[in-house]
Image (tube, rainbow, N blue to C red; front, side, top):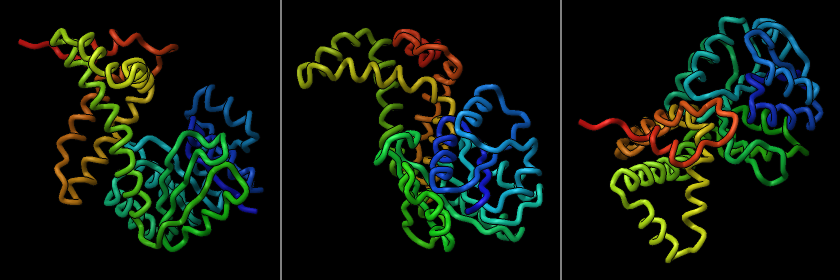
Amino acid sequence: MSAIGIINPGAMGISIAAAARAGGHEVYWASAGRGADTRQRAEAHSLHEVQTLTELCAVCDIMLCVCPPHAAASVAYAVIDAGFSGLYCDGNAIAPRQTQRIGERLAAAGIDFVDGSIIGPPAWEAGSTRFYLSGPSAAQIANLFAGSLAEAVVIGAEIGKASALKMVFAAQTKGFTALLSAIQGAAEQLGVRADLDREWARRDPEVAERRVSQVRGVTGKAWRFAGEMQEIAATFEAAGMPPGFFEAAHEVYQRMARFKDAEELPALEDVLVALTVARD
């Protein structure tokens, strides 16, 4: 049985924490600076509370980080500063080169490192979520989730490989939603959105409604997806592919970021207003 620290038990992180508990391990979280929603999730799934990251690093021999992409490096470096000396797994949606940089810093501090990426929704249903892992110690992380709802899959010993898979997968899924949002915004400004819906319906009677739902449904997560698009752009550029589409997708999601804390999904018309910048 391992003592595992989860950074942070958000919507995805709490499902990973619950999966590790289902694997028979004790899971801890640090409550300093976290809100009431995080506390409610942690208590609902019987996580052990400590106050600070330093305490978390002292009590745990394995650390799992599931946080927004922009925070991945700063969290890892804070763990170094807190004196952690165990096994650290980064499960964030970041570019392979960023993952390698983080791994190099951790290794220099004597911390073992595993590259991880999560594909699928929070792991509350069997078969829905894969936790891809790469690195020499990847099997050690995979073993934590044996018998749980999170399917842990080791795909190699190379740091950066798990992150690369996440980047190219999300390029299609979240990239398409960004493109679809921009298409809807352009059609609205050009006065042909209703005509576009009718043309889509000629091919599939339900497609227009599904695409409206897709654009509205992404708004609450757009603030996080914006950073992910930057990571994908960096990944594509490093692979010799043009990064511009994902730089534009970053801007699309940035314009939707205002809906982060909305209590209910915004109307499509409100999303299209947010997407459109004033023209001279």
